[in-house]
Length: 306
Image (cartoon, rainbow, N blue to C red; front, side, top):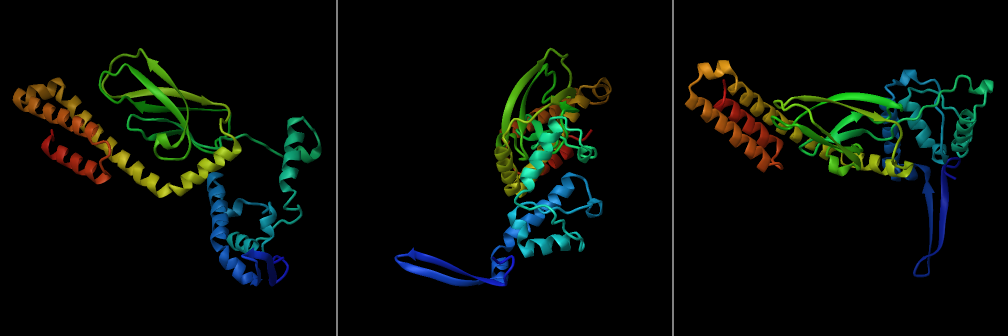
């Protein structure tokens, strides 16, 4: 009613304890009550543009989909966002989903109508795909909204020196820690030569999604809810990785012939002991804060500089 009128009357018979409820609700009051939801709608528009790597100027038409797009405030916010552009109202908002399903069916059935000539339809990953590193963090390999089938190659460091196998757990989701995402499966890579903590190239090929549309939506909503917490966790894990990289790098330098020739064996063993001590600390204090790891790294660098 408020889409067409400035106010409407709400009447509920026997709302509570035989008492009837009646209230006149103005459009302005309704808009104020729903402003948080309207703002979320605009956030979705911004996120969609960002995911598609498009600017406002790249959009040719703004099509309204869903009954709630009839709300005048939603329409005015959309127009303001797109700098006063006209909104496309040629399709009934309640029928837009059915229209899209019909177009998809025509495309899948091989319909060669001229109406379909310039239409491109792609399947994409609804959630990011990646693996869990040795610290439990999610390492994203294939980002959300990537067209599939697709293939991505990335490098992963072994967690310790002389490691000859890697067990990789695959997850999908947007959370910083793998345990908060959806576990898909795991595989074991083994038999490669023992080397210092280094790089192993692993190729992951992704062809189709595993979650239903509703499950994917729930996981995206959860990722948005915990966005700040996840950013904090990413920073913490990055600080931990920086500390361990510094320790292992120092340890490898201490094993080099030129260092052994320049440094006394006593000092070299003392520094190696500090390396081992710091590795044990990192293994023991896996829930330490970002600041703790940064302090430990600065302390290690000052005590073990070469």
